[in-house]
Length: 244
Image (cartoon, rainbow, N blue to C red):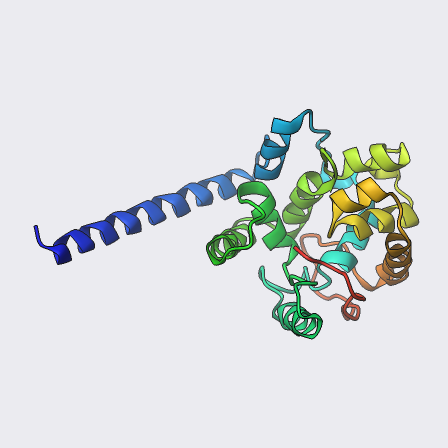
């Protein structure tokens, strides 16, 4: 067998393997239309270190304040894009170049959900490419309401703390439905670095960013089926925003 033929066979096998992998991800995404995930990749790894706090809550059982706060903090254009916020990506690249280091990632909520559910946090081109493919699957297969519901239930909010309900209980001793505007803004302000802020407590940065988030909440609407128009999105967040 010649080298060229072996190379072609290897490439064919890689193509088949990659195709099967994408079909598996597609099947998992389509299942999310009617089934809540039992786990996420991040929670699965966290369970190796001990018990994980996570309690599933349906969309209507989560405070509207938290939904608005998370959109302001992480993805102001969520209801308008199809998985990628190109303006946010350009803004993140500009900030990173000015800072000389990664200070913003530009990832949308859909991209973060793809990573949280199925991937790792490693910063490689392969992972980002797979994240992009899954994000497209999520946008095509699910409604914006469902994507946000999933995100709020699997997002990490501290050491071994996942989802809005566990976060509300841990930090404020209330349910996710009972969060006040300020409490919701404080939780949203933690999202870029939940483990750091959980360890340090309510830092000055979290408090200042929470106040900014709370002031912007009225500028976004909760994604719902049938939403046609939205008010203009808020200005980009101050430094140290989304680093996903």
